[in-house]
Amino acid sequence: MNKILLMFFVVLSATLSGCATNSMTGRSQLMIVSESAAINKSSSLYESMIDAYDKKNKVSTDAVVNERVQKITNRLVDRAVLYKPDSQKWKWQVNVIESDEVNAFCMAGGKMAVYTGLLDKLQPTDDELAQVMGHEISHALANHTAEKMSVDILTKVAVAAVTVAVVASDQSGNQNQRQQNMNTTQDLAILAGAAFVTLPNSRGAETEADKLGIELAAQAGYDPQSAITLWEKMMAETGNKSKGDFMSTHPSPPNRIEAFRALQEPMQKIYKERAPLYADYKPAYQYVRTAKDSAGFSSSNVRVIDEGAPLVEAPAIDSTQAMAFYSPSYESFKQGTLELSCKNCSLKFYLNQSDFKKLQEKRDWRGLAQNIIKVGYEFDLSYYYLGVAAKGLGLVEPAKVYFRKAKELSGTLDSTCSNAKMIKCNGIDVSAAADEALN
Image 1 (cartoon, rainbow, N blue to C red):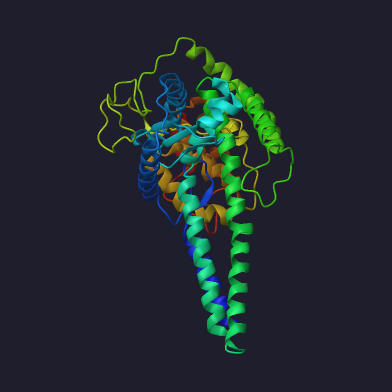
Image 2: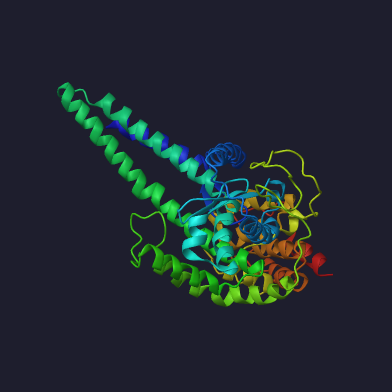
């Protein structure tokens, strides 16, 4: 039993040490596998897969279909890089695969595919297809591939660790009994990993990609209402009308539709602001390449783009101005109406204080604001950091609101770093710094 407990703590330690906060979503993820490793692996797998389909003449050469898919995905990627500036360096590519599967994907690094089964069976409008690809692209933006690979590795480690512990501790019984114990332990570990690690994370990733994808599509001028009509078509095609999610890697179609309806108001606002810009749209830069690329990237039958230098320089993007996906709290931050209400979060703030400082030094204004919001501590340094983040993002009036609040709290006894027991001001005179920022 002691050995089993020891193995448990070893696995737990690996889990905790492998957690990292996603700078784009603000969510804590298990990251044993790095994003660069996931991109390299995905690129290799994609090349092998497309090559295999190509040998069977299953990579579509339909110019109309390829051009349609390329235009839609390029509009999405053109907005995606503003949320994740690093992704501008990815070698984005999409291929249409001739298969009856109702499916599409986007691997780490922007390697995409759409199956003709989805196009033929659902007959999606451009807006609906944009919802599909916005969802898939969001998986790559949110680093879900590396997260999934990390969970898979940890699950296998957990199974191996528990098995070794049981074998080592079971000194009684005959050989058949010991083998049966080992098999049972493996089965239980696999089931536990599936039920409480793999599936919830997978379903959580799907829900996250739904939320990010509908916004990405709205930013690219595609109607958010189409997310609802798409899943109504999907529900009709699959016959899955159950609302039950348990032991499923995906949210049920009815639950997805309910979630999309709840997002309509903020997404429609984005869509109505952006849609007029696409009335006579011509891309300034072609991020996405296809098998036979009409944009002039390849005049041959090349299916997979080499990871070489780009042929044309992409437009410059200021990474300090990275956009944030919609959340009510971040929207309040941008409007200058955010209020931090947690009065008992000093320990949480203390444990994250070094991260706040690093984010400020990196000029990661989005990350700084998101992390302060996540902690939610009503404190002078909290509002000072919000002011710094807002100013960095060019939100002049909201920045003034937060600096004034920081100055106000610096004059109290309970909400200032100058009187705090654990939290230090890190050389910041909040009152003086706020005054300087306001003048």
